Length: 494
Image 1 (cartoon, helix red, strand yellow):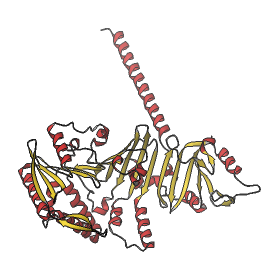
Image 2 (cartoon, one colour; image 1 turned 90 degrees about the vertical axis):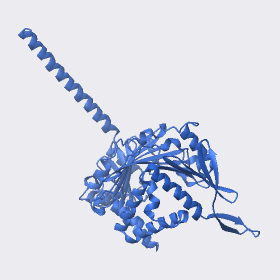
Image 3 (cartoon, one colour; image 1 turned 180 degrees about the horizontal axis):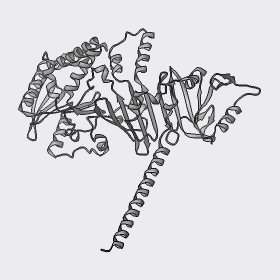
Image 4 (cartoon, one colour; image 1 turned 90 degrees about the horizontal axis):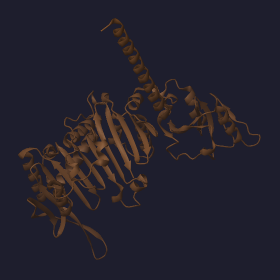
């Protein structure tokens, strides 16, 4: 090959690499511009670190709230930007309106004054209306309003900003895709407010919440609102210093979601792995943070388990929860508990717990007397043996009233509120019935340690849950446990 030909190839390669570099740079800048234009305003750069209890940022493109500013529809205010934020500062609220023109915003505010009215001027460029219970100031690209001038003055006086705090940076850095909304809460200040409120109401400090809040310093959640539903990413920070440098809980076994496809929808559903270790860890944490709280937790758990299984060691009763579990419950109607078993030893323990339940549990049957008075009668459990397919089932009854149904397989224990639910679950295992579709939960379940589901269709229309969920029928949430926090993904589906 001639020297000229080699030089020509070198020139082509150099020019080609340069063109590729330019194209990659253009793509990177384009992505950065799109991401920045979609990103919510970072009001944490304006908020004081010490006074801020929490804040919420919303994009007006996705949220109908608020609808007006001082009585004027937002749609008529062309100088308004896209984002609006609400911040709680020492118990008082401030509202941030992103603006495109401070002059136009000032003209609007001036138009609200009554004839001859002058602003009451406060320090740090804060003005208050005489005729309206509101004060305002301008801060960067925001018009900020609040009933109290002191709240706005704190924005100008702050030496340290929230955006510089380690807790905020930890939470904010773990959440991506903040296109519709973002919430941040300083849980330490929430803990202080809880204790203060309890004191004012004459309520003795309970210990549980105070101890728990000490572990979790901050919480944040990003919101994405779409036609197919609302999607949330959340992170709850963990202060390992309060735990002696140890993690809150470190799962040793992966959650494979083996049991979930055999389930069926209930009002409340919960699935996960290694519940026994989680319960033990919670007890350890509570005991270390507040000995009284630890004792109350342990005694409450032992009392409940003793009611069902008699006096046995707590650790012995929990050993069956070392593997995967699923629990579905519809209040007053039905439930399903599935537990994964490993080896013959687990199968024997499950059979022994079943026997102890029959021996020890006393069902409470409400009886209505002739005078209308209701009285609870305690009834012992009897067992009716049946076969369903090639599986032996145990139907627990109190008199002629069915109480629950139980089946023991080679690698699973099943307990249901009704014989029908137990048989449907066995049908799913055997292939006689289609397994439950996991399509709505597939993305959520990826890499998760547990799942929690609420189905509003199972609750009365007037229930508070249906009021809160409004147009949504299903709330599904999964969490992933890290040494320094808990990452949660949630879907609200119509």
